[in-house]
Length: 303
Image (cartoon, rainbow, N blue to C red):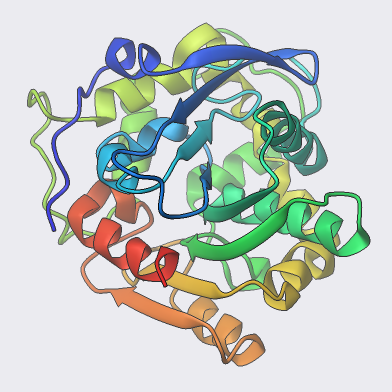
C-alpha cells in the first residue's frame, strides 16, 4: 500500500482545516470525512513534541478510507495559539476532550505518538475515573517515552529541561537550522527521505510551523511534559497498560529516544497487545516510512 504525496506546505495543510475556540484558545483542527462509506469508528490522532498534526499530512487521505479522521495541533504547537504560559498534559487533554465534545463523538479509536501517547494516557485515566465517557474502541500507540526512565533524552531535550520554565529570549540560539538538525537526528540513518530542499520535503514546513508565532521560544515551556511524566508515570502509563480497549503497537526500532526496550516492557504488561516492529525506522515512523507506517497502523485499526 502506498501513501500518496500531499502538499508539503503549511498553506496547503492549513487550507484543509479550521480554527476552533477550545478551552479559551484558538486551536487548529482538521475533521476529515471518510472517503467512501463510513465503515469504522472515527479516529482521533494525537501528535508529538515539538511537531504537530502535520506529521500525518502524507497519510491522512489513505487513513480516511472508510473512516472519519480528526486531528488538531495541541495548544502551543503548530498552527494553534501559542500563549506564554505553563503548559500541562491535563490542559492538552482538556483541549482534546473539548474538540471531541464539539464534534459530538461518543466513540472513537486513538492513534498517538510521542507526547500524544501521554495525552492519550491522561484521557484513558479520565475514562477509568468516569470523567470522560467517550468509548475508546481500539488504540494504536507509536514511538513515545511511555517508560520515561528507559528514555534516552537528546542533548537538546536535556538542555531545554535544564532551563527555567519561561519563554526564551528572542536572541536564543534556537533557529530553523538547529530545529531541523535536531529532528533529523531522531530519524533512522536508514530512512529514505527527500533531499534537503526537494519539492516533496515536509521538514521545512514542519519547522516553519514550530517557529510560527515564536513557538520555538516556547520549547522550554512545552517540554515540561517530561517532568510531569516522571512525577505521574503510574497514572499515564498505568492507563495505557490497563485500558481494556485493544492495543496495537507500531514502533520504529531505530528510535534513539524511545528505545525498543519500551515495546518489550509494554508487552509484558499487555501480553494481549499486537505489535509491528519497524526496522530501519526511527522516532517519526509516519514521516520516515509513511507507506509502511500506514499499513502497520491500519492493521490495528481494522477488525
